Length: 166
Image (cartoon, rainbow, N blue to C red; front, top):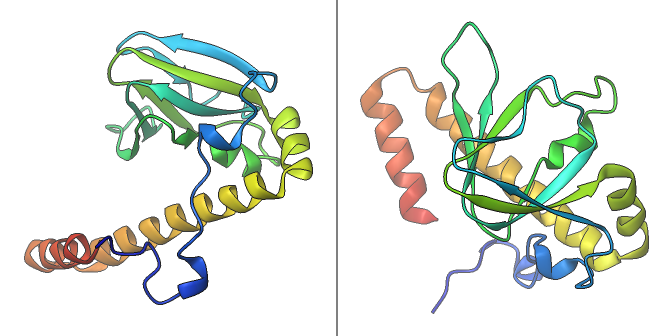
């Protein structure tokens, strides 16, 4: 028996995150982009004007501080969105992170204005996006909780407990 994503919220069990399945199949919202292994999907100073849905491959989203070693924030698997924080970049208009293909990859790119128009028309896609954002926020908060413990043993213990329950 599968464990529900939200065990304490029975009403949420039917909710799923946004995927390619929530988009029109005719490709009318955007275009397919291909990225060779090691190629950047975006750079830190790039315009935050597109959202992507990974079709094939794997992409890592990283911090983008040139004077420090990049930190992997999230690894994106096929069918998942990436670059969704463009929705929050209205003030700066730039990404602030980098995304790099770990293997040869293919993504569906949608301009932010087109995606926002689509969300206004599709309640199912809007709800699925909300679930995706909530799941990613929950994951980030759990990571912060793990990192808040000073000792390596405590961090490892917290991480193992989190992994055991997920």
